[in-house]
Length: 445
Image 1 (cartoon, rainbow, N blue to C red):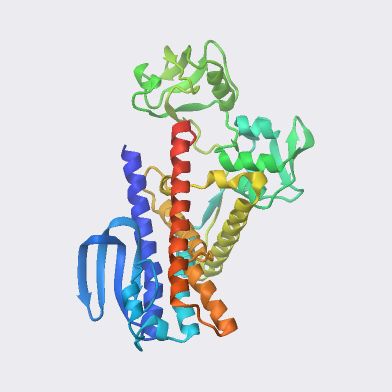
Image 2: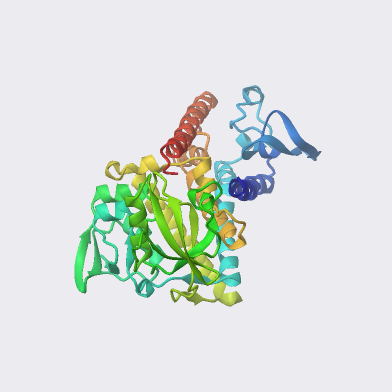
């Protein structure tokens, strides 16, 4: 429960910051071109608001429905659907009275702010923390794979050499590179021999839906970092820092061998051999139907792998942060492209609020928080640029058409387009959150 609350708090704080900044982008350009802004709200306020104050022509407030936020610009057909105001003669301070290029910049203000803010965050991250990663060549024991990885063709102990014969420096970049760059073959060292693992479109679909397909392989030199509440491990009396030796008189060289053994004992019991306070003990433990006993892994050797850390000075952090922002944007666009490839079934991985919240860690960590906030900022910018009426991209699409043709869409047309866009967005939100519910039911979340 505590983990869920921490993730929820991080999600709400992150989205609140991003929504305010996004709407601030629209607000600043509107004020620059002397366009009246009637409302500036964090969250939506149907029927009532939690807080509001009026300064000048603008009412600032906080709504009770935490699904975003908005600025209400005079003379603009938006989600408020204020048709009565649109029937009145245009006023000089209204959005509809401004030249098309000014209206275009007002509509682009939000996504521009999101992109800029993401870059600023990445610059700050590079300066404060730098970059730490595990070089692929330093995964000295090879990889450990789950059932999906085995189905694709990987094996425990494979050492990743190259992807399509190109070296990948960071181990954590392997799966994203395979998926986003549509890698055809992965070169691995297996039993001292170099071999190719072919990646098909159906394999990409499996990778998109699965977690921890391949991770660095680790020796069976583990201990209990934490016991899950209500788990068989807790019921059996297992304690934090108990060191694992074996199970059922069997010894294991690697941790994945122990996991596979647990998988073979689903719904049964095992005799777990451990060291506690320097003494060897044996404890009977039940194994769940998922092949688990309920503990978090810790390692006796915290320096098991040699990580690489790159530090940046103040001025060096600027190009590094910009590069990171551009690369993240490019990677997300590649990922977005997969939704239109039927073979990958990427649409099945589309998630709602629970999926977004789940990307945050279960403990509060500022490095992870700002990394995730920058990533979500880029997502919001790209999604808002989609040419769907009711989104910024829909308004941009119509404004570009007006600039090119010199003809302004009729107000009735814009009204119907806005309604159609809102219906489409609602359907997408329902679909995404329904996917979350299905994942929770299936236990794949």
